[in-house]
Image (cartoon, rainbow, N blue to C red):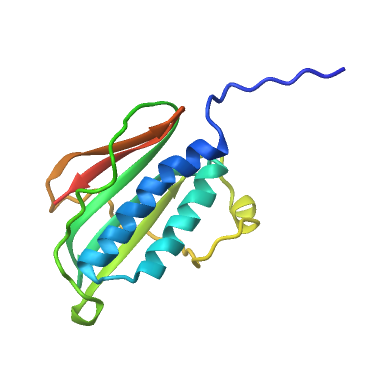
Length: 162
């Protein structure tokens, strides 16, 4: 007879609960900026959720760009234990920066140390992610407290930049 144990206190449903808030943020960003479509936002949220469920993510960084200038950003730092926060999605009324006027949303993912290219290749991702050396320090923006989303120890701390 074998005995198994687990130290994680969260379930797939907990990741899904947190990701509903992240997805809502992305859709609000799409709607206010017009720098991406709602369909694009949903596909990004899908991939972030798939990766989070398999513990592949350290953070996801979402930046509104106008040409090469950063206008706004959010960094979601994922936690797999001890996460707290009950904020509702929102607070992302970003400026109108349509795609046809040079606006775009840049999403940068930082993978966890345990993540591998081979493991990620087996996941049902919708976006073709490519390596990036994007600077996500947002030096030209001011950091502000964001909203934290959590469910049973799994969560994300959201840091806002404007």
